[in-house]
Image 1 (cartoon, rainbow, N blue to C red):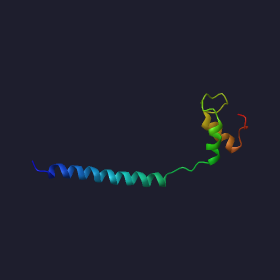
Image 2 (cartoon, rainbow, N blue to C red; image 1 turned 180 degrees about the vertical axis):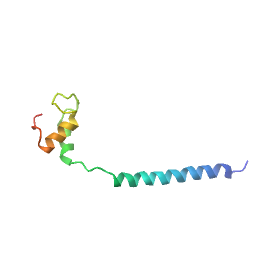
Image 3 (tube, rainbow, N blue to C red; image 1 turned 30 degrees about the horizontal axis):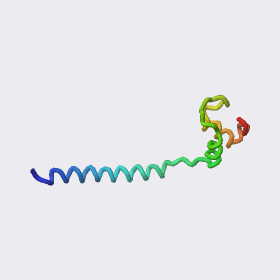
Length: 75
């Protein structure tokens, strides 16, 4: 059995992994979505139950509405 029958597939799969990993890294930077840092700070003080009792679809929606000024701070 020739050792190169094992080395070539390992190198080709490893090379594909490097290429696809670099592509995903570049795509992550190109298509990243910037979020208002106020939303994260507001989300930290909310209970995180995602119950919808405030009238918004989860705590993330409520935090975004509070940060935008379209919801009261005691929502």
